[in-house]
Length: 432
Image (cartoon, rainbow, N blue to C red; front, side):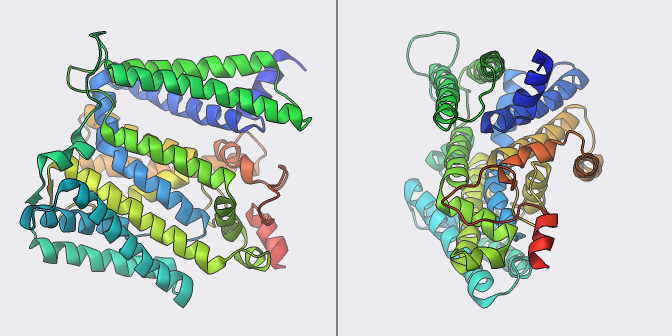
């Protein structure tokens, strides 16, 4: 096997998790380069990258939760309204009842949990389709937001604003960079190396095929280069800015949910339910419990996203959350989730969300009007998914196919999870 074949197989189309993650990073880098050229170098400036994370972190948080909802075979149209309702409740509690802002955050999460339990009950235990339940929730909680807030803006205290508008503080000696951001970047590089070493050790113990060592080195070099570049950009912003606190929250959520969906029985049950609910139930999966959990989890993350947005805006308003659900759903589908459920990854959804964020940002830098932005976003969503589906049908290289490879039946099955078909064709065979 030639070196080029080795590189193509193990770097872009291999079966290891790291290879798939590198493929997603490569796709994102290509999009960044396109806008970097189009905007004459403005896209990758420190100030712009910091602004992108700060402005779109709440959509990426929604995409994490929406991924699990869609994988389970549902859809949630209420997330924007839930975010707006939570924002006004928390803002009112802090302004009118002098609630300390840490308790305000806790209150917001409890409100999200209560809403999620309400919607999850109708979906899981009454059997009303999630589309209908969350459509009703979208109207209900949008009206409740305007009723409680009297269609006015409600300011929030300074301490609360840090979760949406704050940055990592400046500590230590003057290096010309934000030292805490540099430390995070160093930790990320060490984590990538450790994870690659662990993956090779595991495959060696299982006597599975290993990627050539030089390919592993190339993959690590590229990933570390991307991390170092991003670290220096975020750490090198103007004094007082660095990696946003909302970005830290997003990173923590991505790591936690990636681990949960890939390495736990509960996470695999979500994929089993989305792949074939009947087969999963017969295999012992608690179908109602899974459906209840994904709906409740989505509302909690929507509440968190709403509070981050309110904190960044310094006030809650009646227009908060409008069309957020559409951006979150688009991010998940661009990131490789299947419309019928059962397929998708957290990291893929984040890539999809970043694509939408950079698309918005790049078009705004070029002075494109909001009407054209919406038209272009819709076309990009349609064409990206259609092109990838066509490539899959022709047996060619497919980005979505690469992202969803961990859930195909030709990969080793997780012994802790019940078998579930991973494609529409497989599900048809089972149903027949």
